[in-house]
View 1: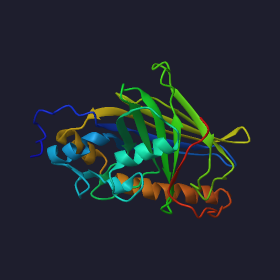
View 2: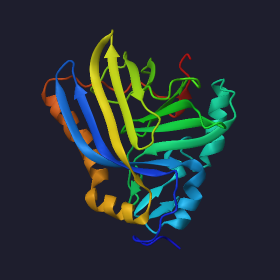
View 3: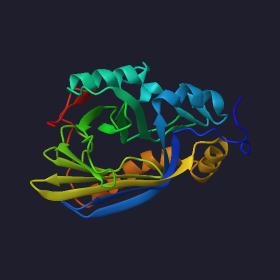
View 4: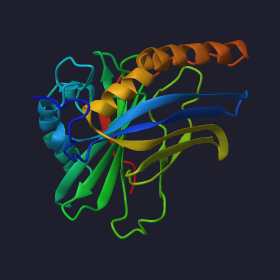
Amino acid sequence: MGQTPDSPARQFKTKLYIGEVSHRRLKPVGHHFKYKVFSALFDLDELPELGKNHRWFSHNRLGLLSFYDKDHGPKTGAPLRPWIEQQLRKGGYDFLLGAVKIHCFPRILGFVFNPISVWFIYDSHERLRAVLHEVRNTQGQWRGYLLPVDANRDEKKLIRQECDKTFYVSPLMEMNCHYHFTLQDPGDYYSLAIRETQNGKKVLLASHTGKARDFTDGKILKTFASHPLQFFKVVIGIHFEALRILLKGVSYKPNPQSQNGDVTFPKK
């Protein structure tokens, strides 16, 4: 039976985040927008129980909010933990896998579009060891960048990662760019900043920040009530802002890629 909004909440590691997404384009024209969003950090091992213990959340079935395995990883609906274990082996990671958490937008009444989902991958000692940046475009294509995290890092410092851009995201951005990711191990706060450069010069700054809420039925209802049209805000917003940029004179770049759905392992 699901919780009622006022029932005592069992403490799950899964969290809701209330926050903001911001994009600032610097070249060849300036353009900036931001909007309020909510997201969630899902612990993969908790998903079956989350679906059983919440009235307003479902796992692999329609609900007010839901998480479908087929939206992530191989996109087949197969369990995600064996898949990420396989990717880690392919990438030469040899630590014993612990928790795996995915930060993303959940489905709202069955609808979702995630421009990026971020996987936080821990070892058996609860140390963050790798991050998978799973990037999507509006043409149904995706690519993952699996990047390492130093197990002996100072946990008070931000995590900095970088790699070449090898995936077509937008018809208004060049391909010969480089990504710089700055993020933190999510807890009470979520923070991801992406700086995109071309020939060493900044062309785009994007960020997603949020403050955590416990994953309870009461919080789910409150969050939905304050963001009921989030899916449409994200999808319509992408196309509306693209139109505004086109009107500023930026040229359209056709999609050059035919391969879809893989994970890359940039040099560690």
